[in-house]
Amino acid sequence: MIVSRLTRLTLRSIALLYLTVLLVVPVGLIFWRSFEHGLGQFWEWITTPAAISALQLTLLIVAIVVPLNVIFGVLTALALARGRFRGKGVLQAVVDLPFAVSPVVVGVALIALWGAEGWFGGIESLGFRVIFGIPGMVLATIFVTLPFVVREVEPVLREIGTEQEEAAATLGATGWQTFSRITLPAVRWGLTYGVVLTIARALGEFGAVTMVSSNFPGVSQTLTLLVNSRYTDDYNEYGAYAAATLLMMVAILVLVVMTLIERRAKGKLADASAETMKAVSADRNEHEAAHAPTAVGAGEENN
Image: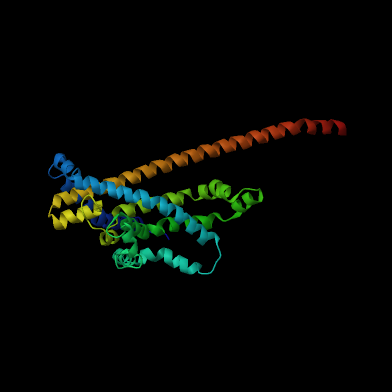
């Protein structure tokens, strides 16, 4: 489709205006309100005991959720991309369920399962509290972040096919060797994007977490809950803006770190490819040098 220069500029202007109104202006307003009273006041708002505890709990939940989602997400993606079994369509639908179900509904379902009157509520009598505690918040976050790794890794697995894996198996490689040396490196970029999306979703989750959390500062209050509590309960508008800014800074830091890791991995991959090409070229030269005298000798005999 060929469009005129005026049409391209119009489309770009509309897209930039859309992003500015929905993204740039709100985020810029939050930053401005956060630092309106000075950097010192902002620092006081984000270093209160409640804010520090909320940040620590948020990072703890992320540290638990991400590895679990990576492990089970990759396994699920392998099952969907490589496996043939009954109920595969049902599993596909279950993976996409968090996209369709409201997070609040997820919280209610967890209460029905793990609450005092729930199916597994008897576990509280053993001294292990799930609802209104950290385990419930972890379960809620795992549920809402479940699809990201699966949906980023599965298409890559389908694209690369099974030829290399079958060749490795033919050469005697074990299942773990095939996975660690062929499958995992092939899906690393999809896995990286899935991890980034999982971290971002876990950092900003509110609906499901607020249903299964007691929201007590220092006990089970994450940064998102702290923002809501300051704004609606304490009427501390600027403190809420400061907590929101802290949350955004953590998210931006995560994205920067993941970008640096990705660039470093790409650099290592390029270096490895260059070394491989050099090795192949050297082997080819040695092979040609080894067979050159034979060819010359054969020519002399013919003469």
